[in-house]
Length: 302
Image (cartoon, rainbow, N blue to C red; front, top):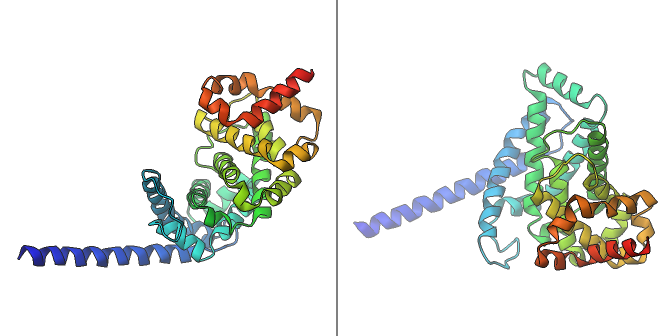
């Protein structure tokens, strides 16, 4: 009787696993481009929340294991389905269109009005969509196979837009809580790209970075008087900067990344803001040596 019960439990678990997998793929397939702040766009929040919750759980489990498995060999079904169904760049396009519209002067008002017209809290749902779509992308970035499918020009344009408007808003005294939003998640995207520059094609990636002025825009945000990021995000941003400074493209074409004297001045200010403190950790200091060596050389020339 016990053996039969075990077999029945196993069969029930297998059936449940298959149902959950089918539900997940269904929600992934529900993710599509809809006109910004249309009823269909707001309705996409439910599927994004479902996929993001699974992706986040699977990502946490992955980080507890010492595994070198590929995306296709892993148990991360959410990220795998997102890539298999061609949704990664779709999510990126969705976020770019959302931030382009939301960053407009009347963006917040338009979102609120559209929400009210549909009996919804437009701003709240928009933040949730941005958070969940961004979380799905960040989790997918845990695998280089997913990153290799990226539309790099679009990603660079999106990151540039986000960082530029963040700096403008903070400088104008409009800072807010950016937790879970693209203003924070963009830093982690950059960190992950830096980790995988060789696999993604260093020259190609750095050309897009230079074209969209990503290096100087990230430095500008980090150099702002008002604090924007917590310690973990600052560490991620520092690692991202180091990867850029370590690249052959930056070393050969520095003038394409740091265009104005103000860019270098902002970079030099990072020491007193947080770099000196972070570099008290010798291991961390050694891990960002390309960045600190560049700053040191610039300081010696003054």
